[in-house]
Length: 267
Ligand SMILES: C[S@@+](CC[C@H](N)C(=O)[O-])C[C@H]1O[C@@H](n2cnc3c(N)ncnc32)[C@H](O)[C@@H]1O
Image (cartoon, rainbow, N blue to C red; front, side, top):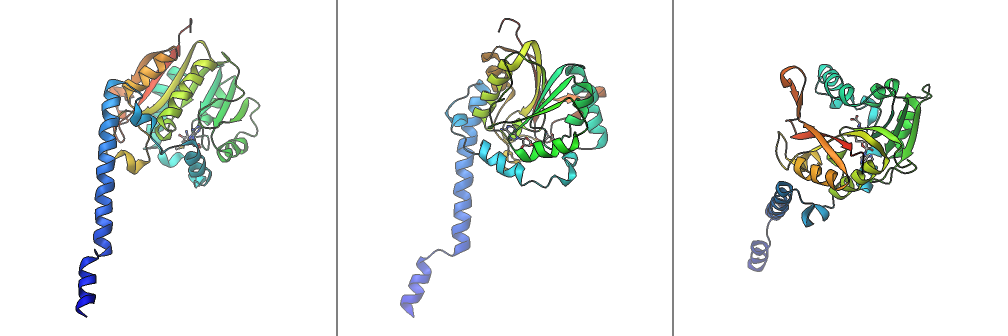
């Protein structure tokens, strides 16, 4: 009996072990996040970003293949007006009409439905066949839509200098930093000289209303994204974090930004 009591006294109760593990995990996260923030401030794709294991192409493929798409992605709109103002003040302003347009990560086509009637050709590139299947069904009657399956950081089958404009919203925020960097090289490869890319991505770690890890969000900052874009021969024209009349809407919930960059004609 005494021996039993001693054993019980020595073994930590399961909830204490769990709480210790949680605390250690949080400490590990805080350590990594501090290093990420430091690299982001300096605009460097350093070891903390390069070693980021979450948000891989395989993780994304799995997550979005099994996603419940019955809401069509419209559930991510803050409101119908929020979506319309984003279209009016950002998409329509930067994505020209009657051009060859490519969208990275269309999902169920929340933005593709706006791009499709405006584009001469619209090429939808996604990491999961599921998203492409949803869009094929949605745009079955449209003769100007094409589809390509990405391995998670490439634009396969898209010839060099063949795309006038690129749109991507709510995608890079979930894509690992090394894949974001690889995509920027692809963006620079496929854009025509003077072509434009409008890409929504994270701007910092654990800022906004929710901690980054809770939203399964990939590290990036406006500084780092601009540096990576410049390294590929893309000129950043602007970085948008609010839009609409008097900046009515913004990306403060997660602290994101939309980078607009253009392929330098000589690149
Ligand atoms: C949150 S959903 C957003 C869908 C759509 N852009 C929207 O705003 O409604 C993310 C989309 O990006 C795609 N995606 C995730 N990682 C990707 C990657 N590495 N390359 C291409 N597409 C990716 C997913 O399959 C999914 O379709």
